[in-house]
Image 1 (cartoon, one colour):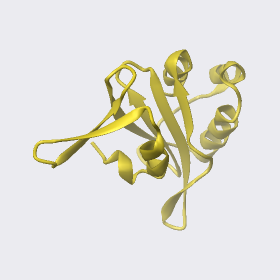
Image 2: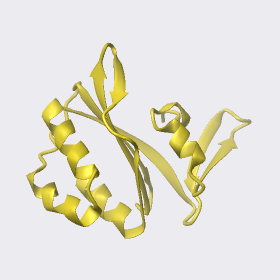
Image 3: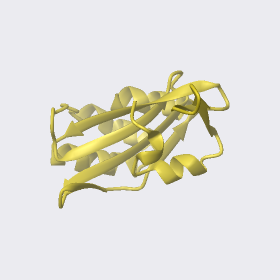
Length: 131
């Protein structure tokens, strides 16, 4: 698994009080845990077309109840290599979700929006839409 600290939203993850980073195997591996439930966090990266990324950013900038109204119109067709990458950190129990949309330009991925964090029922619902 990729190192969560090296993500574009890595600083935001490190400053989140609900997340704990634990080292294991003589410090070789780091595991991120959502402390309220003790659930490990995993990273999911998917690539999409630019149009999908633009619609995702608009959806994420709204409250969850309004964002769900746009969810049926989203067609999240994953690509092998796309010019938009969505990095999602989700707990195993789906009670924590962090999402950031990145656009590939000038040979690097640059953020299209700030990281969005969801907890509890909102995280569970949004994870079903995004993953």
